[in-house]
Image (cartoon, rainbow, N blue to C red):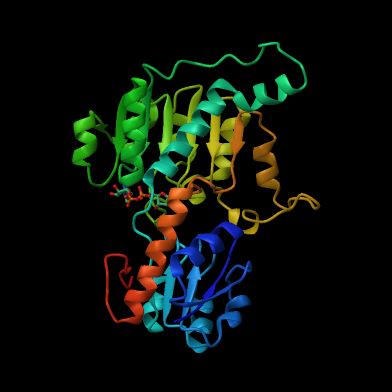
Length: 330
Ligand code: NAD
């Protein structure tokens, strides 16, 4: 099949070429998909997309017009695709339902402990021959209460790691997970979880129900000094409410791998330019905020599995086979 691969970075290309073995004709482009760029895929049967490629109503109409019949999303989250519109245009969408929940959960722990033990500051300080420890005081994670919002694949791995640290585990999910119950997770409403947790970690998909689940009301209920970690999707957090809470000093630290308006920033280089997003620069002005640019998935194991599954999805579609990665038409 002829496949146009949007938002390609060198690591994507390496992994996809290795997994392909000449089976499909892949055209790689660093350009991200939107209504203007959809024309690039004219004459291709499939497009391969990543998290910030926008497959909305207008874009899907253009893709369909150009002959695209399949979307191979190379991530677990698929909130960037309007599934109803895709269905109307006769476009099937597949995702990578499972790759490495370890990659993302381990990155959440990396953000947590970097902020807690200030290793990012220590790194710079020691390189400047400053061996003072002032301002580097952290906290034991042992004995803390961790609130996990979303106890699916990633949330469960995160729960297991936090149990290893000796934490009390609280969970919030529409469907309590038997593996988490076995680990000792107590399921509570989101308001109670916010009020009791020392550390909050988000592992929910972005849906209309979870949009801004962390809002002013929830933030007001949190303990002073709470740590908030988000490796899921930026729009789970109301950024304005978060900035207000940071401004009062109520929040202890915030580790973000995702940001509400990341589409216009992440996976690009602005080092010779400036960032035209005042809310983002405001966030970065707080020393208690650490941002990584949507890299939680980025391990060798995850990239290889994402590529293998994406190629399998393409082959299954080409041979008219559905599989468990086919997304429902809504
Ligand atoms: P999953 O489907 O295994 O788990 C999601 C959990 O959320 C499920 O247990 C589900 O019951 C629960 N849930 C769904 N809607 C809910 C609601 N309205 N209220 C309460 N609970 C709800 O997904 P996963 O593999 O653990 O991934 C979670 C999210 O992580 C993805 O949707 C994606 O957005 C994000 N993610 C981020 C990266 C990254 O690189 N930063 C990589 C992979 C995934």
